[in-house]
Image (cartoon, rainbow over all chains, first blue to last red; front, side, top):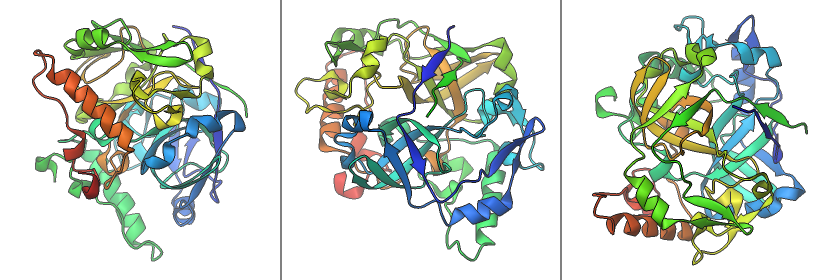
Length: 194
Length: 194
């Protein structure tokens, strides 16, 4: 199969410029310090769309939530070779395949984040919930459609719940953070796993 | 900003090898005939992962739903230049920017589909709901996490509801199809839009 070339259509402007999950010694490591520092600065982020692609935004303001595909440009090239990681860089978790994780370090380092669209100002999208650091190249933007993108009756690996619990605890320990999403109460989670 | 190179990690094996939404004359057109023929053959699809990336799948069988990123390889190169289309190729819909649509023809022709994982057999993932034709190159696979990927209180453009209604009607007219997802009853849709 041939390779394909992606051309960034824009980039992220954010107060955060340090990555939380970093490649190190054939694994990823989590920086709790950076996670804490970044947490209060994720919202809002700004997406700047290149002039060439402004027309592609026509009508986007009629959607409340958007899917953002971005390239994790700080991932070193050799990091794309690793196949397994400690999920979320947590050494107390079992090592799993990259495709079973949301690691930003991947064979094709493309992240997918669904954001809330707060405002569109010309070629700028002001969004909530984009976990992309400053300068991240934007690859694609799509409207989020629940009937297509949000399946019901979802089951997750036990270790994924454990990771979400650790993130929740980290956020609760931080007086700046008032609440945190609980993965088990989501209406799309399988009732046996709630 | 530089361009980036994506390397397929696998490919789709499906009974469907004709595309429903095709680039034509600076727009996309919908083939109802192919949509009808394909409908009964989408499930199951098989994703074959290249040997080099098998280890990336470790642990994936513990998730019920996966996010699949694939390249729409039948999109001609010049099609990546268009900026607006009739959404879903329906000429009775208002012309909108590509980023406000799920058109497979896009500046970077990457589609994102969330599928149900039916079975993993070694390097093969048997999945339900993958709308990728035979031979589509797989770019990435991720576990679907409702608390991260399925926001609540979602609002959509009116024309998107109209498109979903047309698709629903097309499926109802087809005696082979017994039910169709209704976009308005989804628990993640804003209550005013239900």
